[in-house]
Structures are given as C-alpha cells and as structure tokens.
Image 1 (spheres, protein in one colour):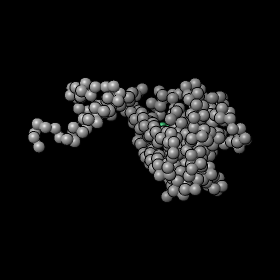
Image 2 (cartoon, helix red, strand yellow):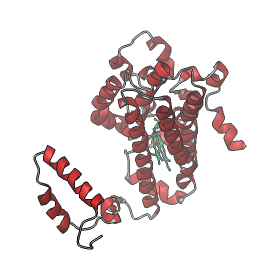
Image 3 (cartoon, protein in one colour):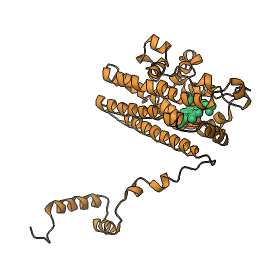
Image 4 (cartoon, helix red, strand yellow):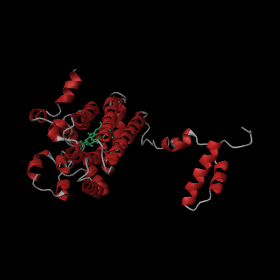
Length: 316
Ligand code: HEM
C-alpha cells in the first residue's frame, strides 16, 4: 500500500463519523480540528485526582481524623455504587434473571468490602485522639448518611423500614406518607436525657425529608423486593443472593459498625446521658431493630434470632 494513502479501515471510520455528525447537522472537519489541538487524556484528569484529594479537611490537629474522614468517604462511594446498581435494575424495561442476579452479586460484593474493611475504624485510630476530635464534629453523625437511607428505601417496601413496635399495626395502611413518618431510625435518634429528637435528626430531616418521601413514591413499585417478588420468586440462585445481601446490609455491616461504637464510646449510660448522647446501645444492635429487606426469605426462627449470624461469625 502506498504510504501516503489512507488505510481503508480508517476511511471507513471517517465516513461513519461524518454520517454521525451530519445527522446532527454538524461538520466533522471542525471537530477533527478540535481533536488535533486537544491534549491527551491523563489518568489524573480522568479521575479528578486533585479534586478528590482536596476533599479531606480535618477540623482538628489530630492526625487520625484524616483516617476517619477518608474512611467515611470511601464508604459513601461504595454506597453510591450500590445505588447505581439498584437504579439500573429499577430502570430496566424488560429485566432478565441473569442481569438481576449479576447486579445483586455486585451489591453483595460491595457490602462484603465494607464489612471486612470496617477494622480501619475499629482498630485503625488511637482511641484518645478519636475521643477528642469527635467533640469537634458534633452534632454531625454517620446517622445522617442520606445514601444509606436511600439504599434502604430502594431495596424494600417502606413498611419493612417502619419501627418494629408499630410495624404490624401499620401494615393495614398502604399510605407511604404515613409510613415514612414511622421510619425506624426516627425513633433511634432521641436524647437519653430528655427523650426529645436530637439535633442530628432535626437537621437531617430538614434537609432530606422530602427526598426520602419522593424516593419512597418512586420506588414503591420498582424497589428490589417488588422486582424479586414479581419476576424471580422461584429462582433459588436469586433467593440465595438476596439473603446474602439482606444479612450483609442489615446484620453484618451494622455489627461491624456497632463494634466501632463499642470500642470508642462504651461508657455507662449515665455519663452518655450527661453529654447529650443518643440511646445507641439500644438502637444500633440489629436484633432490636429487626430490619429485613426481604422478610419472606427468612423462617420464623431466623427472624426471631435476627443478628445471631454476626455473633456466630465473630466467634467462628
Ligand atoms: C469510630 C467510628 C464510628 C463510630 C464510633 C460511630 C458511632 C455511631 C453512633 C453512636 C451512631 C448512632 C447515632 C448517633 O448517636 O450519632 C451511629 C450511627 C450511624 N453511623 Fe456511625 N460510627 C462510626 C463510623 C461510621 C462510618 C465509617 C460510617 C459510614 C458512613 C457510619 C455510618 C453510620 C450510619 C449509617 C448510622 C445510622 C445507623 C442506623 O440508623 O441504623 N458510621 N454511628
């Protein structure tokens, strides 16, 4: 082939490009000019590394605060991936079993990462430093993670997120607006001393209440539980994977998290009361909350003993 002539495959690509741009009334040649002057893409620009590394701004001089910030950010990124997978499932017009299974498997993988890496919090900070810098962060708390709440809302029907004490009584109400008022976490964020809503909860509701209601409406008919029950209720593989997800999200991750609260905050309730703390010892353990995204996948004993899996895993 004459060195100056263009490779036919390249000519073919150029023709296709020309057609693509012509459809939108655009002139390919101008775009090629742009390409000629453009820089090559770099890794650091592509992933916005400089921006990413500018987002850690400790409030104190304690070095371990950086560990605390970055690990929260890592967790939020994984939460974002979980939501991304759920969104793809919910938006699929014709959902196939393999697609659903693959996405749930990915979600399980993300939660496994989160559960196994929680030791970064439990063992990775000096207790003395933590107890000091955390006072500069009040009243902020991971409790205010909106993505965590959205994962719950998109995974199941709101009734399964209602406080366990009133869940059965609320079954008869199909009204999401009413159910949202009784989401389990609202009952958790009360001050030990006064029994009033904590400032943490008040601020969280002020910012996100409407988005949670909207998400509840949007996912009423396309949350993971609804999709599973409608299309895949007979699939043993999907059932197995959903059980893994339920256990990771509602037992194993919460227990890994609880371990960090136990490690850093374990004190007698009176001294917590005095500092305006929450009733987290009663609120955080999965066995009290009994949140299950897919209650029909667990037998009565498993429901009764919800939370036991984590304890067994810990002593294995
Ligand atoms: C040393 C590390 C940690 C400690 C001591 C801790 C402590 C607590 C406590 C005491 C609560 C109860 C609410 C409150 O009193 O504020 C809570 C809730 C929560 N935290 Fe953490 N936390 C830690 C790390 C994290 C991390 C890394 C995340 C990741 C985003 C996180 C997410 C959450 C969530 C989602 C809740 C609400 C749980 C629920 O409603 O069931 N926490 N945390």
